[in-house]
Length: 99
Image (cartoon, rainbow, N blue to C red; front, side, top):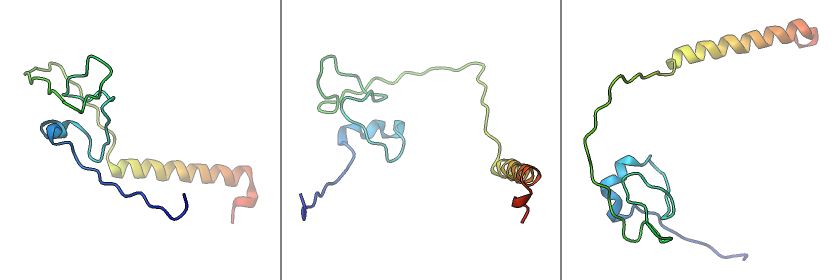
């Protein structure tokens, strides 16, 4: 409809504040999503109407291996090398691109 506006406000559900640290920032969830730390509804209802938090329990991880991506400097150096190689291949294959 021309000339109309829709104004809305988004805010965290007060009952979910104890588990907000489990959700990524600026992440929208609905009552039909599986939300970590919240008991899923047993019927077809909205889990956010009366959310029940799962109990916390301690756990221990053994033999954890963490693989981190290369640093930003390594990433940029690799990207620069690939772009330069691509440019050189273009010049070799098509001399018109050698400007």
